[in-house]
Length: 344
Image 1 (cartoon, helix red, strand yellow):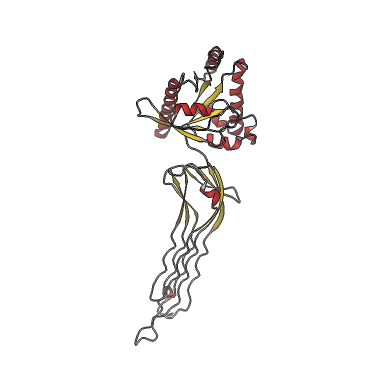
Image 2: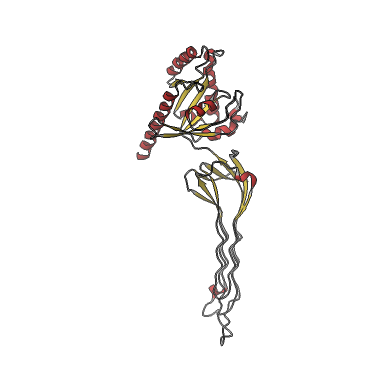
């Protein structure tokens, strides 16, 4: 299934049913009282966050959605039935905006969370509602509500524990294939990853689990939309910790760390708070000739700036277990920190 993380759709709620003007006609009572029933309420259009939906692809093929109208009232005090609500299921992490104004209407971050995006029109009142001792034969009803309609912009921001950040061809796809159950396309050219991939990482004893997101490679100018930048950066916002993936290229020497500076600069320009997020560094491709010596030197330099790093090879599996354990430790520390803020 194609991954679609943005969609523009039109929604229209149901109109209310008309209230009825009717008078009771019974044998021997030619002038019975009013008995017109109310019209039913129009159906709402509701978005619901579902764990069973991973992409907005459904909305790429169908863009117009309309809830049923309420039924009209009838004589003999029969009220019209309400229109059934139209529930559209979207992925957890979907941001809902008014397409015309850009206003954020809701952020669906929890399973089962709902957002009413178009309310159904109210039903009209039947003439039975307006009978009084002095007005025994009202010949009017109130009009029904028209419902609501609007264009919406849906934006999916993936929710993961770990987000892989790296330049194109740094080996992120190979790494997530090695550490998780994900199987993204892996090839030796930039921008192999054109859409995010989610993988599940389990601890050795199977008691802990992390969700890891492999995201499109970043290039200089990504915060201005260069490459796949803006789409990438939107997804990184919700990850709890960052894993920078750097390619150990002996031809670059210590300039390998320049790649980290590029990545940090792009995150800073997009959203400075991202740099305060807990992070680790994976120095990948340690299996290449001359890469091990370079990797150890890079580790020393990273340690001087307080960064924790791991020498790994997505190809051979070297260092992967240590990296996975480091990710679990950092996520647990993050959980304790979040729990402490909540209790405070």
